Image 1 (cartoon, rainbow, N blue to C red):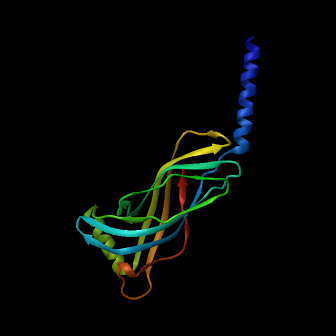
Image 2: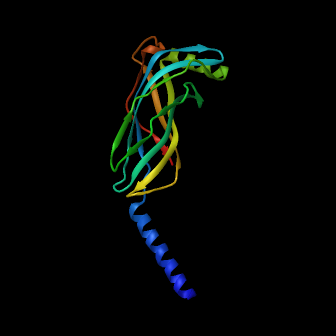
Image 3: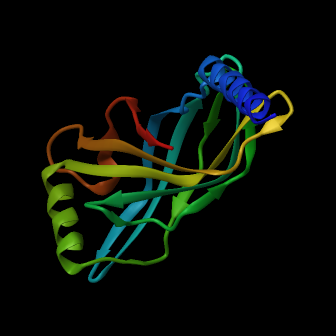
Length: 186
């Protein structure tokens, strides 16, 4: 009887391993397509006030696994300090090989930052080169057939370089360079 139960457990474990290896879910790929500063950044001390529109795309690389985005919060950081308040995106389901695009407006009335961060950003704007990060923090679930997994933490970081077209730079004259791939952790 014990050998029968052991054999049954080994068979079930082997089948589970084969199914996992065949369907192994890959993490989604995110791309930052655009970042526009919609109103000037007010460089008060010790806070920054910014408004931006971000265009993000996500692609599900899986052939047999869908992705539920349960919660996604998007915000912009400068030198690892948030300069916009997180904006929640609506929950969606992304089917096999599907692409989803979001374009939220990120705004902040006043986000407190360290004084040196506000000064550094003011200097970067004056030089015509600002390096920002668009970040996404959320929860995802995998779906195979009718089975839905537990919830997993998703963290996405997208580099965004804004440069001046030439000459004297103002925040409103800075332009986003080119679409970039983002790092994704699940």
